[in-house]
Image 1 (cartoon, rainbow, N blue to C red):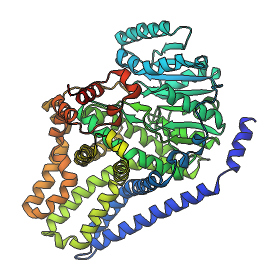
Image 2: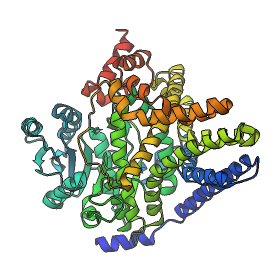
Image 3: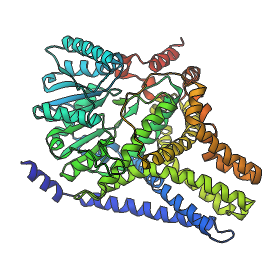
Image 4: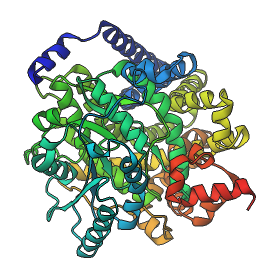
Length: 597
């Protein structure tokens, strides 16, 4: 079958059940949004509905899609996790047909994209995968490419030495090629494009890994077998979890991600189906359509953010779907990992780079030929950051309105306002609540998280952490979007992935604007309407505490306390599996606790 005929077949085969699922999902989302807006209008009714109230409703409406969609994804995900015999097969039927004994007949490239990374860590993260593939009977079907964009001469020399030694060790068992570009043209997307132009024709599939990615050989083999069995599949994204960490910040953050990701991803996969996400790593690509249809040229200079696209992954996904190939996610945990930033400062750096990349999606929203769900995905990625100024606007304008009103009753109805506040919080946390319910109802999974008491204590810690972190990031996004409007952009540099302390002076230089806004709003309410402070703390509290939050969550002692108490524990700390080979400090510390050391 030719590529063109395959695309035609896929276009004609849009399944009616998926169309009905999408219609139901967006009907639920739309109805919920309208109901919440109506509830807020009623809540703001004391004294009539004026221009300030209208502004608040508009700002609130901008924030709504993000967590209303998250709410319904979480609800659907929970229903599937609890009542489906095989939740993964429910949203990805092809996966259920794979037994694990199918012969590997396709040629697969493993692409490891690095830039100024510590060489020993990159090699250690790769080691279990390389050994597993080398021991496999069809190892000749795999070829590992270390694609370096490193511009530091010392690191480049270390890379050359390290990966030459790895290649020598595996010679005759697994092919390894190290290549370093002299320039970082087009960033990671350009790195992969260079591979495609040089070696893409030699392979059927490519598994894309970042420098902090860890995947087991079995996970890679499973992705390849699924791709082999489904010729319409263009991109298959694995579900990525955080590696066990000794950093308090990373540990709590990725515990929260672990809670939310499974229910959210299963729920979204139920209705997105063949228009799924691509996160740029820990995924497998079908190379022929990827090379033919997924090249992204630089944006014109008159675009909101011109130049090469930083967040290229989701654009590549919608282009793959436009070409007639499916993009799906495989929502299985335990075999695909990444390393998260160890401090708030590093997390902000990474997040603002995503923010800049996602703002480039404006240019692609009206691209001819995109599927409606593909346009939704681009718009949703934009809203992830555009909603942040709306939250900050709600804080500032809402604080001023309450202070001028003199008392809460003159601004908002207590009865309706309380219901509204509880509903918003419930929807905000819905994907995590869904997974919490699922974990508590599964004894084996509950034990893997350290037991019911530790798990619930960890949930409480993560909830406070998430509330504080959210407002800090909302303010950071707001400031950064303002910088983008006046032409200030970020480049693409290496990340500090190892645990390190954050000095008070550094935190103060980075986060004083957040602190000042939090202090200003709470001071204004303390002087006028103190009874409103508890509600305002859900946004202003994180801003006020931004500096100590950054310092404390980076302290090694805090991380050690969490480890010693078994808090924010990941299942891999209880049963490490192949991660035991990495000798991660968090896993070794957990093992010591189990032995009573």
